[in-house]
Length: 131
Image 1 (spheres, rainbow, N blue to C red):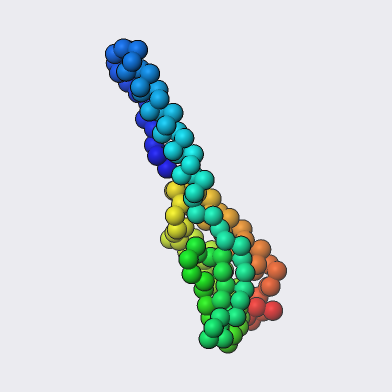
Image 2 (cartoon, one colour):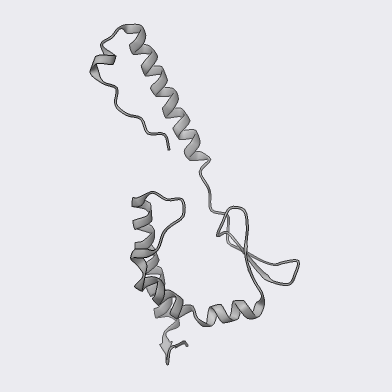
């Protein structure tokens, strides 16, 4: 995102031509900023596919590459869903959000806790394992 600073009064008062040039430059920067925001990384839709080597490929996490695990790895990961969510809640303050501003990262961490708590509630815990 392009930051636009306010123009000092001494610059604005330096003449009509300079003032018009600065206004045009500010408008061009605003338009450029809007265009760049439109090109910002858009989340790909969440999709599942069987990869060429027989793994489960999950698309939608990153722009370029899927996350791929073999079936037995995926089942093992899912068996530990509650533990993973609890770990993420416990370590929430240390977690980063890729490609976000500090305010967006805070909102992501708050959302993450709520989403993990909902998963824990949905799947429950029985003797350290998901039900």
